[in-house]
Amino acid sequence: MTLAFDLRFSIGERVLHAKLSTSASRIAIVGASGVGKTTLLRAVAGSLEGVHGTLSVRDVIFLEGVEVRVPMERRRIGWVPQDARLFPHLSVRENVAFAADGPVDHLTSALALDRLLDRRPGALSGGERQRVAIARALAARPKLLLLDEPLSALDRPSRADLARVLESERERLGALVMLVSHDEADVAALADEIYALDETGTLAKR
Amino acid sequence: MDELFVPALLSLLVASLGAILGLPIAIAVGHRLVRTRGVMRVALSSFVLLPLALPPVVTGYLLLLLLGRRGLLGPVLEPLGIRIAFSTTGAVIAGLVVGLPLYIVAARRAFEEVDPALVEVARSLGRTRAQVFREIELPLARRGLAAGAVLAFGRALGEFGATVVLAGDVAGRTRTIPLAVYAALSRPGGEGTALTLALVSVGLSVLALALHELLASARSR
Image (cartoon, rainbow over all chains, first blue to last red; front, side):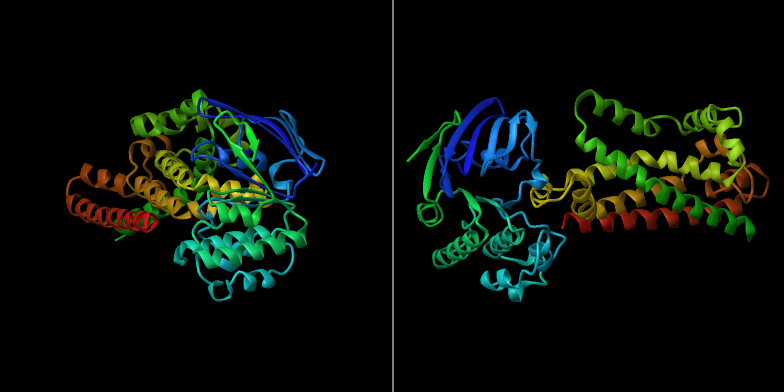
């Protein structure tokens, strides 16, 4: 199995039980707004409190019961959060290099960031911020890419370009993808298996 | 002239040292308050904010009971050569303690304003809690901390009651502007000195508050 989890967590009063076991490298989670897709990503990332169950990535156990075997900072995650969440006090260059493990020139040029390197996030458009967030995540050479609406602020042609960059980098890194998206085209471009999440946490394969 | 310059310089020294020495305390307690919940938060918060509600004379008296020669920690401080009574050290401690609540409240607000999602992302990118604190939270809170430092500085400038009780009124050592104003008013013909010192005090306070306002508005932009 590339990714397997059986997790219980809560959103306010609502308890979710999410279970999945797959050998696909790229999965997408779809579902209504507010159902808990982002929270599920946070549970997998390890940043959500009160999660229990099991979680393993490529047979490495991250979580067992309530015992965190691999803490968040050692999970080799490349997280592209909704709204990019760039570090506002760092330049584009510093954001991309934040967790870089080696040179990042190929990423900044593939993502068309070269002329933005000295800017701060506050001076970027929504689409530019998303491209920086993607570069920052890929620069960490992750083994698991958590993509939360990663292309939502981009126009259609840029989305297709960026999806191609993401896919070629993912392949090079041998990373798994867990994508959350509302966009059918993004899901088709970035995922092989699609799961619909409902309010109880049940994941139904489409 | 010494009647004017020495208290003014001493006030600046006492208030500056209070702001500098208070910084690590404000950072540590302010950051802790953001992460603490429930009863612990109420307890910690009430304890650190106490000097804000207490009459400064009472704060000074409690500090004397703790740090004075015959105080709880007196036997520890004396062999180390640390004297609180009638010393500038005592004036600095009094100024620091009365300024701390404002400092801590400002620090707590500054840390609360840091987007928790940034902390999560930094952690997911391999940073430990301590690294995230140093690289993300502290730099993002710096304007709020600076605003807190200015407030604490301003509060220490005006400190009277705790200073008199803890450190006494000694010209050149503990006689800051407020104490010098009181001393000048207590002797015949001292009104002129008192008025000049009062004007200096107003000037310094206005400067500190203007700086605080500038920092606060720069932060909200």
